[in-house]
Image (tube, rainbow, N blue to C red):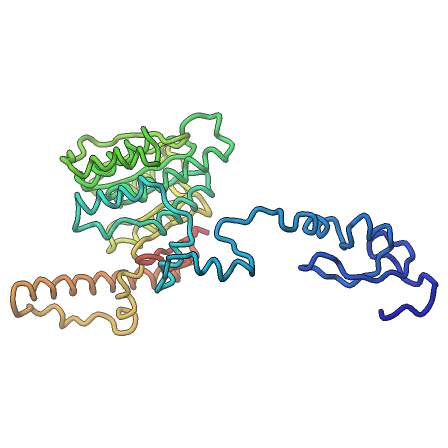
Length: 378
């Protein structure tokens, strides 16, 4: 389509189909379609090819800029204004993800103060946000195997409450064992359970903001009373939460999976328990649909085991490491710790190798924190 050589209307309007000789480009710079268009359509669509492109032209410069979004003209200014300098993609990812509630950060601080040797075991902001988001996309039923100090429990509970508000059960009351958004958390350690239940009690009463964090900060001063009894329940929004103290979580899971109880199936099972029996947990959860529904997720934590699974995969485990260590007491303790880490890395590698070949499930391993495997039950 070049210059006009006749007064005859030889073209057909792209928009309405009438005869015309006018040729133009769509005024939406992100479309810029070359087209034949009649004068009426040019006027009504403001020189664009469609109502959609017309809307973009009309709203140009008036669309609110999204948080963190910069136009080409703003890029240099944004760089100058930003004080953050990231040296790795993990920190960058955290910096450009939605922030976690104040209470969650306080749970991390309390764990470091009350159980310092286990502070590294907390899920953390990035993983916790993912757990919350996954729970929010289901009907909100989560089985947590390993409560520790309640960080992941709180994330799942927030997600379950969101799911409840979005779902069809909003008028059916608080979720519980028989149905609705509900988190059931199993734990053996009474000390950890005392801390976890104290955290969720604050969440149940005050929510997730600064007031809740301030109240939770008082827990760090102690003393924390070890959990007594067999169970305790809380509510957050429309979601229910129950901590259940168990001696052997695997035995409890197997019993729940095999019994004809009133316990409704879960959408998600989060396994953060005995690393030497992970495949047994998968077997119990995948054997039928009583405990974990068909299509449900089994989430297994620590599948990369500090990165040592690479060595386990490439070199295996050297049994000569079992010889008695020599040297100072400090050197012996360090060697013993490293030896245990390598043995557990081998156990984790064996689990990873076995579950990925299991035809009952499909697996996606994510290199987030210490490794997280999402295992969908077929």
